[in-house]
Every structure is written in C-alpha cells, then in structure tokens.
Image (tube, rainbow, N blue to C red; front, side, top):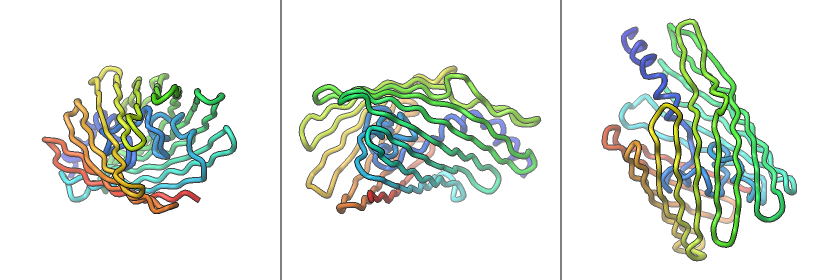
Length: 265
C-alpha cells in the first residue's frame, strides 16, 4: 500500500491538473467550459453563469472505469440578483487512498447587454493517508462578450501560481488561460470551441455541438485533442427539472460515464 501511495504522490501534479468537473452538459460538448452559458460554467469561466434567470442547482456523478474505486461527485448552484450573480460549487475526486476536493465561490456581473465579468475563489484540499493533508487557495477571473449570434469567452485560472505545500507533498495548482467562442447556427444548433494553454504543460483544444431535436430533448457531442477524447451525451428538460447524461472516451483510460440532475426554482 505504501508503494501505491508513493505512486500517487508521483502522479499528484497530473491529478491536480486534470480534475475540473464541468457537468454533463459541458462535458458532452467536448469539455467546453469557456463560452457556453450553463450553471456548470462556474467550474470553468464563471462569467458564463450571468444568463441564468432563476436560482438553479445541479449535481453530478462520474464513474472512472479504469478503477472501480475512483469516482467524482460535484454540486453547484447559482442565484441571480438582478445584474449580479452569486454561486458556489464543491467537487471531490478520488478514493480511500487519495482524495482531492475543491470548494468554489463566485461573483459575476453583467455590464449592459453584451459584457459579463466574474471572479471566483477556490479552496483546494488534498488528503493522502500516511502523507497527511494539505490545502491551498486560488483565484480565477473570466469575461464573456456577446454580439449577434456569437458569444466570446476568456478566463485565467490561478494566475498567481498558487500551489500545495506540505512537508511530504508539494504540487502546483494548474495555471491556465482559455479562450472560446459559441455560435448559434440556428435556434436548434449551438456550436462551441475552445483553446486552453496550461502553463508548463500541454495545450488543449476542443469542439462541441448541441442540437435541440425537440423542446425537451438535446443531443450533444464533441472532442478534445490533448488528451485525445471523444464525448457524447443528451439532455432532457422537463420544465424546471433537467436530466443529463454524458460520457467521455479516452483510448488509455476507457469510458467515463456521467449523470447529472438540475433544478431551476
């Protein structure tokens, strides 16, 4: 078990970078969390929560099939207050020998009809038996601009380069810069793309599609390049209740099914 713990510590930087739960809607669209408006945008570009009209809450669960023990659980909520928006989220990833969690608090504001800006603070925590636990804070900022059928988004995560510091565990929290755009090709078709530069790491890009077949049913799909993944899913909208399913496929890690439930009060 100690050998397994040592392996986890050696992979800690990768794990800290990779886990950012976007909910099944944004996941199914290729992990588009930069310019797509959704309650789960609070985990990506928080300025994209400024189109929510009613208090909303959503929960999700991800099963990582490369291990029967590893899973992710997350919850987010957003409250609109005129042109001001407040929200929070919590996610936890891992298993008994390794747990990574993040609590997020966000504030967004609309400036006129086109521009939105948001800032959020994150409290990160790592727990590894035999190594102890460590925590850290980070700050993210984001902006969204709408013009015609286009929406452009940009966000910077952890620009100050905060990291976990512990006597036996030291790992950076991911610093990244993302830009993205969405285009409403019609009232039923939304196309979204993004480009993300991870400082001192890989550069990722992705493309996604949301097609509303009928009023209550949307089909979604997408892909990302690093790592190479394919995504698919669907959403059912029953007035105030949303049921969403997504899956991501990685050639090395297999499928990661995800389910989410949302409610707008």
